[in-house]
Amino acid sequence: MHRDVERVLFSQEQIAQRVSELAAALSAEYQGRNPLCIGVLKGSVFFMADLLRQMDTMASMDFMILSSYGQGSVSQGKVKIVKDLDVEIVGRDVIIVEDIIDTGHTLAQLMKLLDTRHPASIKLVTLLDKPARREVSFVPDLCGFTVPDEFLVGYGLDYAERYRNLPYIGVLKRAIYE
Ligand code: IMP
Ligand code: MG
Image (spheres, helix red, strand yellow):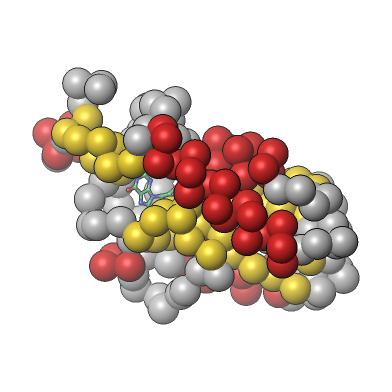
């Protein structure tokens, strides 16, 4: 375990198991279709890569970069598009793939924006959900794990761009960000 990590919340094996369950659910739901999976960079990269490789339906991918957190650990409630999609989504089945929903601001604003582009459908799958911190009500269509109100790193999640490549999800020691 990394010395900045207080404890491991989900091991590599637990994550893999849950991701394959989510992939099975999506495969059943999108059978015979070609959904566009939109990953929100950078936190969702490992989840997106693992999830899509386990889906046995067609699935296209695109990415967006949104900024909300900057360098720190507290959301500012404002979301800016740093990189937009490369493709049109009108008439497409869209699946947003997120790492974690915290206050809900990022996803609420992203869903609102994508809705104005008239996709055929739009669903949200998130690996982690931290409902205790919600500021705008928001419920994901699919969720890997509900997590406690602690700052998490690993499997894509960062603190100031560090720890993303830890293979597990762990609780960051408070001393690192306080
Ligand atoms: P929201 O707008 O507050 O829901 O923030 C969502 C984004 O904040 C996520 O996509 C993450 O990038 C980041 N975030 C929220 N909680 C954590 C955490 O515990 N660890 C790392 N990043 C987090
Ligand atoms: Mg994110």
